[in-house]
Image (cartoon, rainbow, N blue to C red; front, top):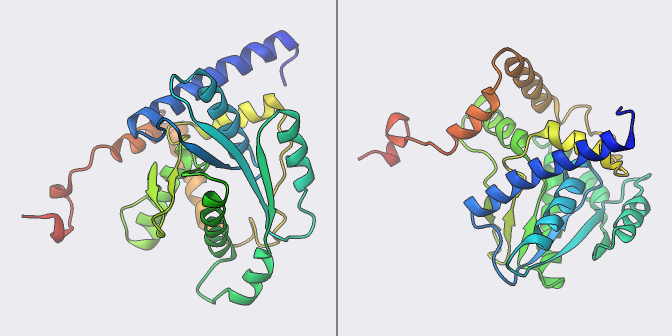
Length: 260
């Protein structure tokens, strides 16, 4: 921990500027935000979504174009979830927000198939809830807190375990055609987000699902550990992987549908 308030303030300001700069570059590169947008910012209670909300609000205040935000949290029905802590934080910071409740936990119990993991099904159910809430709240875009490390880990997970070359796109049209999902933290390092969340002392509320971190994320944890070791040995490796996603050469791969 830092020892003085002055040091902490300076460190926080530097981190915030770096995150804001990378967020702004992603927003510009992919045209994520346009004039008049009303953006639903999904706030789970974790470090990533808190950081996204606070930094994109900084961007909104500085932006020459007008757009609005509303934070949305979903109580999925797992016992012990402290939605009240999230609401108190959003209220104290002056954010417009909406708290909703859904029986996702019960749906997982009844609909989970042997080939599925609880986290994957839960994620789809949450996403479907957000897709339904966005038009109800007058939003045309949904902002999610996935960051640089998430994109890289997902790329490797799909390569290693699904035989596909794909990741999380910065822009994604929902299947129903009504919403556009954006990931403004696509260029931001998870280490910066963790440090920023600690300095801001966000009230972190973890998902109380009993399956979380036990079985469903085993492959992702293995990929993360592998990347951390490689990054220590070869600094800049993760940035190189992220850059590779921008420099595709289909003619040098094996997809026959992309060949002449």
